[in-house]
Image (cartoon, rainbow, N blue to C red; front, side, top):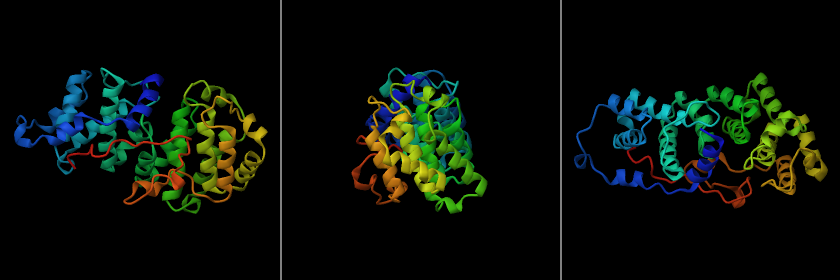
Length: 314
C-alpha cells in the first residue's frame, strides 16, 4: 500500500460509516443464494478483482464467527495483511478511498475479534491502527511484542508505523501489569526504543519528518508516553529536560508546522513525570470504558472510532 493510500485510510477508516456491512446485516440466510463452501469463498477473498474480493467478504460476513473454519479465517487475516502499511505486497485495488476504507474497516473488526496469534503481523501494520488494535495485540500475549518493537525501531518504518508501534508497546506494558512484569532484557529493549526518539536528532528524524502528515511530534508524543510508563531513570531525566525547556523540545526537530506543538509535548512530558496515565486508555475498549481521560486526544484532535456493528455475524 502506498503512503498516500495508507494515510488516506487512517483518516477515513476512523470515521466513515460503513454502508454495505449494514446491508449484509439486513439479509437473512433464506434471502441469499445457497452458501458456497468456505474454501471457495476464501479463494475469492484473495482475488485481485475488487468485485470478487468484496463479494467474498460480504459472503463471509453472513457466516457466524463461531462457524468460520480455518481457511476463511486465514483468508481474512491475509486480506488485511495485504493492505498492511510499509509492505511491498498490495491488496486488492478499490474504486475509491471510501470503498477501501469500508473494506479495511470491516476486515479489521473481524480479524481483531478472532484473538488469533496468526493475526499479529496484520494487526501491527494495520492502516487504521488505534487503541483497539493495540489492546488486541496486548491480549495476544508476549508473542506480539517483538513485532511491535520491530516496526517501532526499524529504519524502514515510516512515521506512522513508528507511532503505532510505540503506542502498542505502551499499551502492552500497561495491560500486562507494568514494567515489573517484563523480562529484564525485554524491558531494556523498550527503554532503548523510547530513547531512540527522545535522545536527540539523528538520521531517523530526517526520514520521519519527510511525510507531510506524520511529523516528528506524533512520534515524540508516543515515545514520551512509553517512557512515562517504563519509569527508567535515564528516560525520566530526559522527560524532565523536555518538560522544563522549550528549546530542548525544539532541538528534537519539532517545528511550528507540526500538528503536535512544542508546548503540548512539554505538557505531555510533565504529565508522564507526574504519573498521569496517558491517553487513550486500554480500559476504554473494555465494557463501560471511557475513550479518553478528560476527553483529551493525545494527538491533539477529536478522535472518532471505527463504526460499531461491523462484526454483524458474531
